[in-house]
Length: 365
Ligand SMILES: Cc1ncc(COP(=O)(O)O)c(C=O)c1O
Image 1 (cartoon, rainbow, N blue to C red):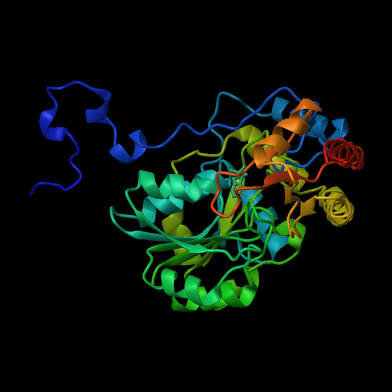
Image 2 (cartoon, helix red, strand yellow):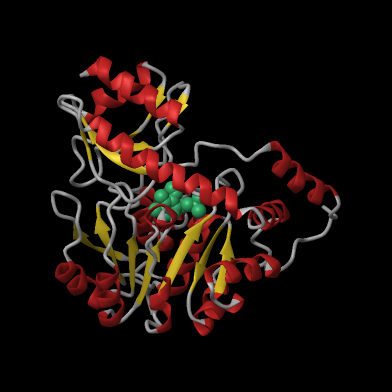
């Protein structure tokens, strides 16, 4: 039977790239992050503080004692147990990936067939669209309101028949939450799996984890890249029901998590007091910074439950981005996202970095 997706396969004598690559991939722009030279980096929602040297030494000492010529554990069992203790779930409910991006990729890979529907919010994290397109799925995006809030009924309707629903909470780039009641409503009504991407949940202190007990189709993804300040290593995970976890694991290739990332995360999870302290400081900084920026003439900083927020000035988003870049401050121009034409996204930095941001904006407005 001819396959509807045999793009150019019958014309293989024409040896062009177009015949070899999926059209959905050819149509995608290359993923780029605008990165002019800068001294203050507020564009990727990382933790502004690196790990103390003593802690890094603990990681490198442990790595030095381990054989590098051997594969790491097939599945990082020790790390799973540490995470399970922290989250009060069982270790067999957890799967671990190279960043939550890899976990998301596995979820798309194991669920989607061409023309399946993926339901998301709009605007939201760009990787969902990228993955949906590469799996030849159709996107059903539920638009956020002008102040970036979810419309629960619209979302529920759109997700009902979706093979996969993916909700980012707090959402990027908006910083707004999907209310827990809405997540439960969606997870109850939807026929497919419902993923809640909680990359920034440490900063909202709101999690859908308790819903796992009564929503068997719910999956929660988390990352070590943000509050845990481990973006340089690549580590993320997902929590779900046991049986589902067994299937999702199949979407990850064997030995996906390298030794260094496993060891770094294991060491970090023995120092979560420091992580908690930093989260508390960043939440305080975020709230003070947003309040302060809103007192500047012509500046709007949107309320946020994450470690970043949206910002507009009387200038265009591009001019705001460039005006800050000229002063050495790198933010994210998200004006291409639906509903975000006039805004940039700013990561909360150290108190000194935030002070520099305020002063730079004072010079611009
Ligand atoms: C909402 C969201 N989800 C997932 C990720 C991916 O994180 P990582 O692959 O570093 O775990 C990011 C990174 O920026 C993000 O903003």
